[in-house]
Length: 206
Picture (cartoon, rainbow, N blue to C red):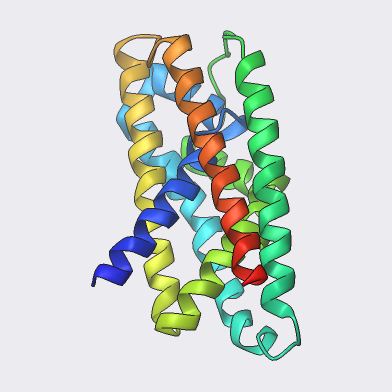
């Protein structure tokens, strides 16, 4: 149980930056939240889950067969570390340059929008093919197919909490947290991403 909780903390920390990164899904969620409150955020998260769950399962099913390829885990560790560094750098840059904008009221429903913005978000797909795949691979090497459930369980609640929470606060006021505190939070998460990228590389160096 302790091992699962320790792994869960890693999944949560790494996932947090991706979940909370300002992007199309987050921006659309705020727009819906201004009019629909927490319900729109939950529906947005459900749409995101429709895409994310099958993707995680497919990646998990490919782990065992790919593990037979020599140097597979080394390659994944290196790619995962590189992507963590890249995401951290882009996230810091985007956060520091982030400016508040007024978004028009969306025309499509939040569920459909959640699906569309997930399917057509290359950063979301790349994240799971690299960083996320590393987490799945590590989990399955310890808990076999139950590792898929563990990764998904520790990750998915954050989507619902973040999208539901931000849409709720957006409906109550048009400001979630101060711009300064939000930037501090995102930069801190980015630095944690860099730390875990270093640990990925250290694992293959030992």
